[in-house]
Length: 166
Image (cartoon, rainbow, N blue to C red; front, top):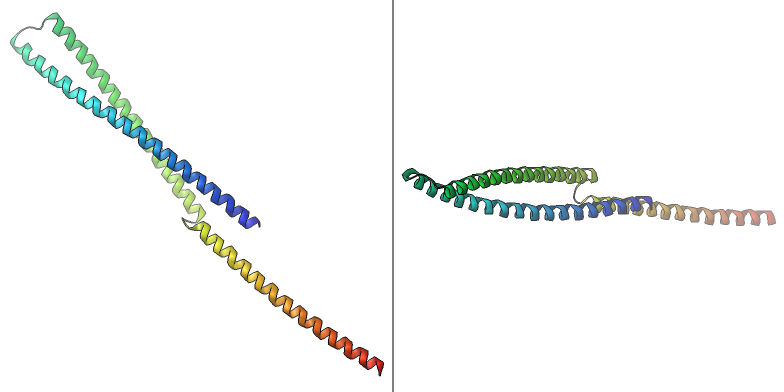
């Protein structure tokens, strides 16, 4: 009974671990998808800003910039800097997420190794069932031997009683 209880506990832990792993993987995928969408938006905005900047620079080669154009360029440079920092932040977050995913994969792999692989529960159950069959067979053989001994003992007592009676 203790072996099957231990096996049940291990199976429950394994199922819980699998559920947690799947949930974390789904959450990570959602976060990564959102981050990739944000990065794509930023790339598009960056290309638009570059196009605007190149247009402004072409205009500036022919004439001096007006105060309005200078303020727009300053604003665009600030936005470029802001987006560069956002991109770096996203890259670092992605790297952290990838590190966490690899750590969890390593933990899962180690758990599987300690449990004996993917089919460990089934294999352990087979071993337990085989032990039960062997022990039941030994018990059956011992009972047969015991019953033969009782029968032989009964015969010998009957013979002793018959000899005493003579």
